[in-house]
Image (cartoon, rainbow, N blue to C red; front, top):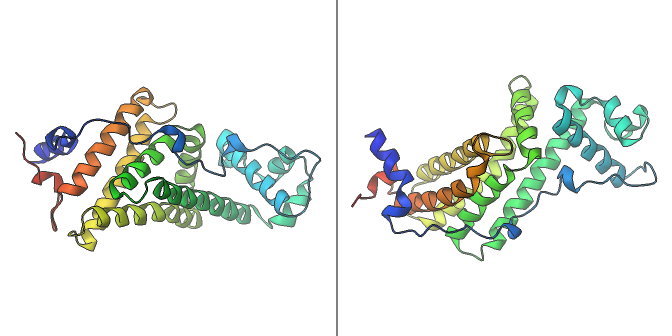
Amino acid sequence: MNSRRLFVLWHAPQIVGFQSDRCFERDIVPKLKFSVDRFAPREGGYSRGAEGHELILQTALSVLVEHGYQAMTLRRIAAECGLKAGHITYYFKSKDDLVRALLQMIAGSYREAIEATAENAGGDPEQKLKNLIRFILEDGRTKQTMFLFPELWALANHDPFVKERVNEMYMPEHAYIETVVEEMNPALTAKDRQNVAALILSSLEGIAVFAGYGKIWEDRMDSLEELACDCFVAFVKAMKPGDKVGAERLSIA
């Protein structure tokens, strides 16, 4: 039964007559505002205020991505900002305070990007889901994401504060998927929607792990994006209230 279920799920596009197509054009995938690639240090040195705060956080992010958490010391961040170490404490009393602010900045950027995927869908719930799928997988194609999140996951294993913040970062995506699933299939129960959202989100994260930046199946990401869009749309539409696996409801010709 399990092998049949998997076959039906991953062949859902053919079963229900989907035509493989791009989820949407890459140029409307929302960009994350905290991206290291978009950051250029301000000329003229350091200023107290919003610019100095952003400079420190962007530099901390760059160090974390390029060198790892252990290298992300206040002294190193200050040096790369062109500041004295004491200036960092004007904004952040400790490394924990800086990490807290950095994670808040990252989480806020993801929330804004998720909102942008909804706006780009024009009110179509199926397109909303496809847009979010594409955003998550396109994000996984960046060095920043594939270097940043393993550092955060590893740190979360030993630091309850970081674990809580990392979990919080995934909650908006889960809640958004749950809302879209309800729009696509109103008959599903709240528990059904929660389970489907968890399945979709965890599956997409797994795809990024194996086909993201520098990974073994990176060259297959375009095809995997198309499959993920078609399969999960079909899955959500086919599921019935109380189904353990919604794709089981699909018939094989």
